[in-house]
Image (cartoon, rainbow over the protein chains, first blue to last red):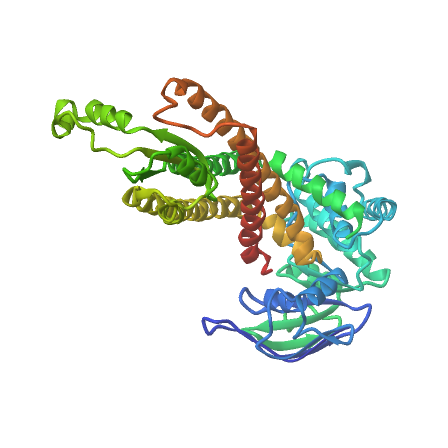
Length: 228
Length: 291
């Protein structure tokens, strides 16, 4: 599903964000990406959705090398990957329904298909009753569910989550994690960057640790720390 | 593009304009002011050209006959057939002397004594776009003609004024257009900057550049056309008022009027509005599409 080989990213100011990282994520896996701030977690995710170009190395999604894509191909790649963000990235003037439908509008889906699909994912994340509410009227957890619904509406095979519980209290964080676990159970591959030690330790999923841009650990069913 | 998608773009553009009211009003105001200034220069240039065209119509060719000519009408008939001559007026020598006296008083007729040495003459009025020098050359060749004066200096001066008006007008219009375009691009850039997050999200969920661009482009075009409409309204009302107020001085200060000119002004303003809005949005969005 996701392959990185000797993946390196050096920014124009000379900072080495990723240094020769090699890893493979199989279809259907749930992987935690852990490490201190500046370890390279977000950089890695940004390379997967092509917000950035790698300096060298190979990165492939679904057996397609995405290091060198044309603009149109980048748009197509992003449609096959769902992303959820720490700051939700919702459009404040659009309702919950419109925010989710937006991801289908851009691929010019039919109105009926949009309606069906949006209501299905809103039901999945438990927000069917708040479809016509603005994001500002929702709690942080609910906003993250909207973001999750938007990332799922295109039925992505790969879901990237960049600190999705970073702004949430522990209970709400667990609600989001339960949803992610359910989505993973249905077959979606998930790569989640997080600082949340408790979640990583309790979920017992594969853990890839980065430090100063280097892959320092890759443990199946691991914990946040090496000893765990 | 599917019609439904275009409908979506149009809806998004209209929502965008309504949602970002303050920026919409600011951009609309600046586009209107810019096009209004552009229109003023357009009116100025057109009126200068109109003024010089009117002055050209005043150009006459004076043909003096030989003293031996006994039948001036025969010469006049030949002069009337020259190409580019619209009208001929006979000026008998007595009238010539009277004109001298009218212009210079007694000094003008001092040299006349009892005898009037002035020849009979014809004044040739020119047809539109006729070349006075060419007519003067042809008139000289007519039998019975002694001398032809075509106001060479005045004609050359007028030609220079026309050329200068054209060049200065073009430069002013181009500079105004560039200045307005610069301001419009910057204003639209502010509106796009305010919505950069929206652009980023669109790109992250897989929107192509053209999908992101269209609603903004339509917004720019709508703003440009609205601005052009407002500027046209202000200009046509203001100019109409000015023409009405200055109607008493029309002889000294002739001003263009009439529906045809209004149509030209409208076409120019709407074309510029469309271009400013569309191009402004296109340029403004470019840097925010790099997500």
